[in-house]
Length: 246
Length: 246
DNA sequence: ATAAAGTTTGACCATTGGTCAAAAGTGGGC
DNA sequence: GCCCACTTTTGACCAATGGTCAAACTTTAT
Image (tube, rainbow over all chains, first blue to last red; front, top):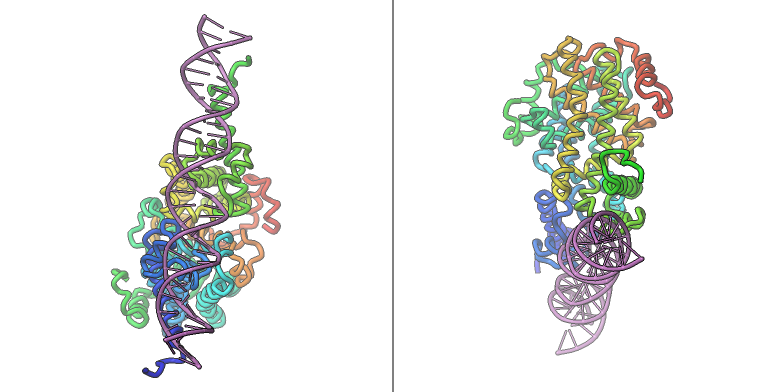
């Protein structure tokens, strides 16, 4: 018998592996069909376990979906924190987070829809306390990544602090980002607004907020194309596929 | 027998009245419980008709909810168009629409949540074609109210047209508004961001976008307090209750 | 080999969105 | 006042599905 490769027993490792298998298939169904158009029986068949086993991992369908969303949100927070390490001025680092969010949105096209479901109290109330807390924790990491840069920008005088507080600025950036991602997926709106590149539309709106905040250097005061190239090279070397004309 | 007061027969008028009764109670349930936590039987009891009768008006629960949302959206469009008649400079008129949207959000605290449900294709596919078209129509009215002012602002030179197109500017304003309304309802975020007055937070973000667009006069170049007072007096005399410190 | 402990299963239950045949109601003609 | 054709309303019923749990099955310790 081989020695355990970690501190977890075989059973525990199997349990975790199965949970990840379930989450993987649930994510796929969620992406393909949304929330309603699949059921636990179908998921059970997909993972080749029975329905009862699913319920040993998740207390309800909502709990499961929350777990999928939290997994995604953790990746988003990872990307944000990674982007925040970009070497450059504060607004450039904020921009790197903007790219991080686009990178995330490309990898998880259904995330914002699912996240909107979670905002319904009757939905989230059916999930377990632990998973709710885990989700809130990852959300806080995303918030803090932005908030930290803004506080630093204000301390350095690159972002005027007489207009809004650091929290108001963070709230503005978060709001415009979420709103833009949601709206840019609306088929009707895409036609009206003539949106070709969704991610570019999101980042433009972020730029408008930053300019509105007076965050130096303003859009026309600096060669942000060069910054974008650096961000892509340093932080997201794999992202160039979706960013054709940086 | 009295002569008919309109071109509709008694039966037709009763049908319409019943439909409005159903919508009224459905709206109440939606506000109190969200989408899942009530069923058609409960609604039937509330309106004192049977389930079968409900289905003579609406093809599905989703169809019914879409009808409620469209009713709300029509009011939103009405308010937008009313606000657009405000006498003043283009940015002031845009600001009046910002107030209109807050007025609407106060009257329909659940609207944006419900609207997010509609963005799920599996949801909206269960509604009837007519109701989908009606919803898209009211959405277009809202879009156009903003878009029209922006086009005029660009023609007058009050809004520079070398940065973004009129459609991009409209998209930015719509996105920030929706995103801010959604985010400002998030309990966690309200704590983090220290939001006391949600509507003020939404309007601040709109101001940041307008400033970012370079829409003259900028926030610090003009006494918008006075504008706000005029908007409230001329357009929304009844709104002063929620706007304590304009 | 056997018993104890843990794991997996799928038949089963309750809820609920949606249907439809039958009951109830309506109104015009005689 | 009565009949009858037509419309409207009803609620028993159906199918789908989230969730449960006793029994079957597997693993482990002795």
